[in-house]
Structure formats: structure tokens, C-alpha cells
Image (cartoon, rainbow, N blue to C red; front, side):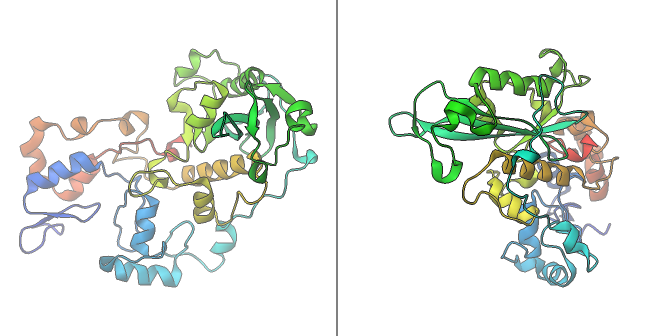
Length: 353
């Protein structure tokens, strides 16, 4: 009997360590779990977790320690990093892992890009929008400020936006936006929603036609942000799903219930500094989303096995990895061999490198 089965004949998953009485149950679990080397893993015991939040609970970094993971939590507490969740780090690691909050935005930091030539050779751009309230009760979100940032945290486009309908709540306590900003631009310019959307689209398409951006071979840039669907809807834009990198919808950064975490929580937890205090500039949100994207992209995952070979492997369905006609053959495999066949149900950002 292999090491993944105990003395009572129970079969243990090589990824999450769940145990099953029958091998056919383990095979069915592998079909539905979609384990892969791209999942967050405990650096002590090697257990795969569905999200970083689940890993934080496993290691006790989230304030709670699971009873079965007490030994992992003890080892992590002595040498682990609560930000990147690595189990064994050198003493000087914290200084480089914990990032610092960006200074307040000033005119000297702004580099306005024009047309489709902005952004230089950036492969990814981060989009951030600030909304004001419209409607009788001010609850209707309308975009009032737009910011686009490149991979080096330089602003390539920023503008105030003239709403198409009357503003009934400027939400000044958080946005810092006043009526005069939407009239004269407050030093950074003011545009109509349509003009701002066209500028953002030109920056993202990078000289490509909109229909060609849907091809995986296009020069269009990756769009990074948090809650991108909300921002794009406010601008009246549509962008191909395979070019979006949304920190609110990326499975490893979501809650264990598969609900989104706030950008404020993600920045504090995985970058080590706080945002969205006082008057909030969209530049700060753009930088936080870009830093989260780069941290996720920089993870050192195996490129072979378990869906690490590229887009095609990552997109493979569970039926392709574990076809029903191979059931008997699959049941004769070891849990480790089943794990090598398994593919993720999302595209890991490390494949963008």
C-alpha cells in the first residue's frame, strides 16, 4: 500500500489530504476539486488550499488556527512571513516583503499619455475609477474620475469626468471631489464620459483594432484592477475576458466562500500597508491592484504537470483530465499520479510571465 493510504485502507488525496474509503471516491474528488501546483500550499506540510485565506487559517496567520494544523501553525509562527505566507524566511525578509504606501499624488508624478501611444512598452495597465452619487437618493454610481497606471506605477492617463446626469451626492468625505472639479478639471483636465472611455480604450488596445483584441496573439494590453466589471460598465466599455486581471475575481485572493475580498483588505493583508483613508485618489487603488497582480504573477510555480504548461492545459476540463472511460485505469493510479493529471479551473497569473 502506498504512503497516501493508511493502515485501514483509506485513500488520501495527495493535495488536500482528505481521506476516502474507496478509490473511486478519490477519483471523483479529483474531478471536482481541480487541484494543481498553482494552488496556495503550506510550506510546512505541503497541503494545498483553495485560496490564500484558507492557507492563512491553516497557518494561524489569519487569527484562527485549525486544530489539525497546530504543528504547522507553530512552525510558521517561529519563521514564517504573515504577508507572503512562506514558512521559512531569512531575518531580513520582512523589509522587502512589506511594501510601503505611496506618497500623495502631486502634479510632478503625473505623466499624461496621449492617444494610443501612452503607456510605452507596458504589457499591463491598471484602471481605477472614483464614483459619485446620482439619482434621488444619491445611490446611483456614476464615474467622476479616471486614472490609468502602468507597471512602473506612473500615471499614463488621468482626468475628471463630466457625468451625463446631475450629481446629487459628491461623496466628498471619501472622493474629495467638489462641483468645481467636474467643471474645470482641478488641474488634471475634465472630459465627457465618451471621450474618457475612448482614451482608456486606445491605451488598452495599443494600436490594435477592437475585434483583433479578442485574439490571443494581439498586442492589446492586460487590464488590471479591482471590480473591473463595475468600472468598465460605468465607462460604457467592453474588454475581452482573457485580458482582464481582476483582483476581486481571482480565486486565490477570494474568501473561502468564493466571495470577493475588498481591495483595502487585500492590500493590508498581502502587501502590508493600508489604503483608502481620508480622500481617496484612484491612483492609490491602481497601484495597489498592480502590486497585487505583480505579486501573484511572480509566484514560482512548476510549469509542467498539473496544468502548468500554458493556456491550453489551464483551460482543460475535468472531463478531459479524468475521462469516464478511463475510470478503471484511474482507480489503479496512486494519489500522486492523479494529482499530476489534475488541471486548475482558473488561469494562474504566473503564466503571464
